[in-house]
Length: 428
Image 1 (cartoon, rainbow, N blue to C red):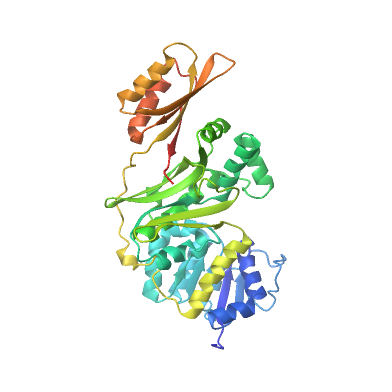
Image 2 (cartoon, rainbow, N blue to C red; image 1 turned 90 degrees about the horizontal axis):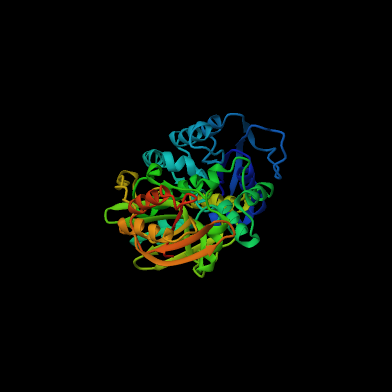
């Protein structure tokens, strides 16, 4: 064993940073044996010096400024656990790389927006940039795509990438409650933030999907190229109707190769209830990689929290201690060309309409759909006590633009009592 320890600086001592410090202390001997050398926290940075982090940090140097921490010459690697796409997190990461220090980060937003620049800088400086913890928490999907499945031509990578949304959709189905009270419960349990828009709006999942697409297809992390739709408009009625037809509703992130282009989309979808994704409950994450050699490889596990995230960061530190210096995204940053953004391919859809309960209403819907080339595969109708009726239609595969034109025409018709709901059906 190399007696010289890997000297770590922790920028940020919140849930993630403190979790890393705790894990390094608790499993010090095991980690040293696997890394071939000790891994020690030598300096830390956070806003509050007095808070109890559940681990003794009294021997560590303290820096109030995370950038000053990143510039310390007595460190080998900086762990960035601050968060945010810009500000102190970005400045600390850039300073660490510029100073010749390796970098491990859990910051998906930073990498989704600035990953190409950071990867280029790390390669030029001859240092490692590792980010296993940035995607799906404790699931080792970054290593799987960059190493274990590196010989595969990947056609599609998809998954449930946000535990908050999966918890809400699961609990709505289980309890029969609407979105708002379940969201409030998720906030009370700590699964959702006071401002949950980052999660329920799909942004968190979109950051992760941008990184998965880069790893899978060798394109740049084009966050702006991700089509994003959250779960705010998913109603209990949609979950109930989907269940009656053998589906469940999931917020799904999907990246796939479409010729030379890459499609990236985060949206609520109907998936087969018996599929690996369809059976996923609670805050668990799952990622499926479809490769030409391996077929479909399924990775499932906890997507957030102190333990799983710290596990991923410490795994990166062990790799760095062993001498891992490969390119961050599996190929040199210079080869991460911007892939054309795919026009959304055709897909079947679930449609829910609230219509006047009168003769000819359903015929008008069918006519407007047919006028745009949208054909009906299945239909079910629920009569209500009032004057309206709920009609659910499953379509054959169609272009979303054509479907939107048909839905606009239906919404403008007197037979429509509410805005239609459209959810893609993803074959998983």
